[in-house]
Image (cartoon, rainbow, N blue to C red; front, side):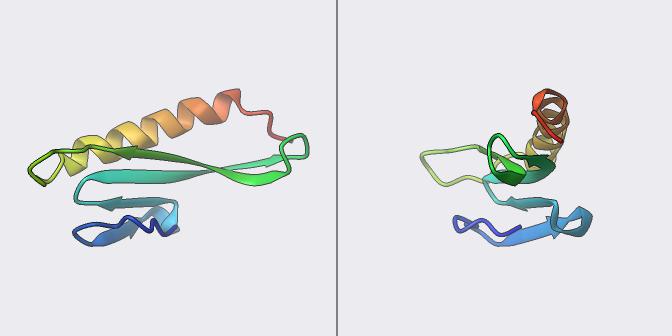
Length: 78
C-alpha cells in the first residue's frame, strides 16, 4: 500500500497491508463486495500536529490494525 502523503518517510509491514509514516498509518481490509464493486477497503488514520512533531507511531499502527479488524466484521464481504 502506498500513501501519497507519506511525510517523513513511508514504511510498510505485513506484506504491504499496513503502511505508516511520521504522522499516520493505514491498513487494507480485503473484502470482495459486488454491492460496492470493491476488492479491498482502506482505513487511514493521521495524527496532525501544528508544529510538525511526529505522532506516536506504535499507537497509530495498533489503532489502525484494531479498527481495520472491527470494520472488516461489518463490511458486506462476499
